[in-house]
Image (tube, rainbow, N blue to C red; front, side, top):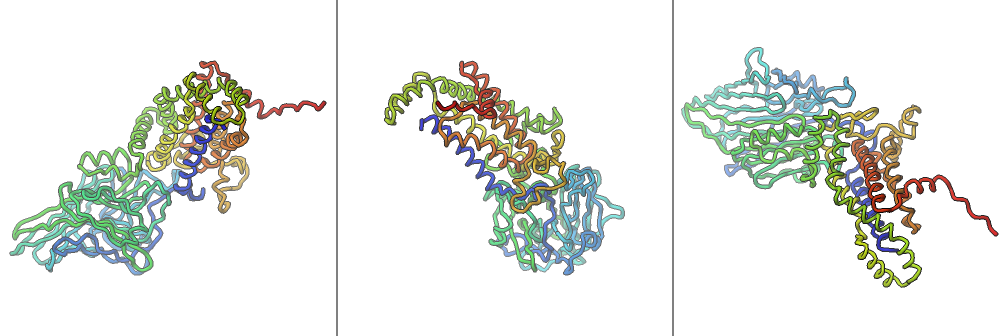
Length: 604
């Protein structure tokens, strides 16, 4: 086998191996699961939450959140167990529970469970006692050895009559412990997803009081996750000592608890598109903790921070401040919060992955173009052209070298006849020809290798960014982040049958229009070159488009559209370069030979 043939096979095998590995590690689920958008509702029922907060030197610990009802209730019944104050903004709707002062009821107005306009809006936070408790809590705990009465999960706070929490109207809650301490909690919210919580305590006793501020996010029961290797779902945070922490549910369930000291930072629980995180002041020293505890038949997961003791002198007041992000992980908003509030690496709330330096810039370019053209699919096509332009010098050199290699094929064939089985001499003579003609034998690998990191980055962009969720293209593509919903196995919807329901192999049967278009463009790209003389190599070239067609059929349709468009541009580019180098374009001849069998000469 010649070196150029060997290198071409290596390039093909490499690209296939990478994509197969990507398919394996991303854990592509059944098509029914893929079409079903993730919501924030976990599957378990709640129970008593574990104690939040790490233990500082004094041995003080934060309180356990209030126990939920023994008998599971519907979400509506659980909400009715506490008086509530409405939360209403342009992006969220919900309520604050006066019993416990928790933020435990929040839905996202702008996002629905499916692409259907009448489907339910996304529910993010739910109260303790509901089927899927997920809430945030702020408060105080007394210092070690103190017996000061502080508000807890059962405390009934007082709110002004007719109060509502809106971007224009803060909410002030008060509670008197009856022993000389008056607690006041002021909540504000912006137009989006950021809450600001100021907890004030007024000491009217005759002695100083030491209290520790805390905040937590608690989730009862293990939620349903997509299970993708490239996506983190679970506990997350950034601490000044430890950096980014991404802890999966199963891992924290085994470890039970991990603690990190930090100055500022943030921590919470994230889903694919939504998250709830508590954020201390950027200069506050805290003990950050990730924990899990068995509660009945389920596990309760919690992230929390416990601040240093605040001493409130007799007749004085003290205030501590924190924030809660609870909403959709919109890139522009997350980046804006990081800059506005000096939140350490808050942009990592979005899982950009190892290729952060490619993935995020690629998204920003696509998003910028989208705001001009109004369609993310069109933006992807334009970015593909831009990428082709950026890599044009390298691709041009690569295709030119491939064209020159085709031009010297007659000389290579003559060398094979001349040297026969003398492989060493044949390789030496071939290298002399390459050197004389300035041909790089491995140049053909470069276009494929260039596409791989861009392919991964675009896959990540389509998969993790909420901006791509339910983003339509044209025609039947109503969600670029989901696979093509059509399939050839029911004649694209003519036959009333869903092949995706077939056990085990259902997702392989969802072979839609765009994957077929992609496969055709890949096949045309293969046919652009002369048929390989080696039977093994020819078999790889013949089967590769079909294999990739089935592999990519379960990928996001936006990625498949990109790949088809990229193949089309590559065919055009390579054809032009081959003509400029005086090399015949074999595309039409190869297509003709594929469909028109040559007549065998008659014997005799």
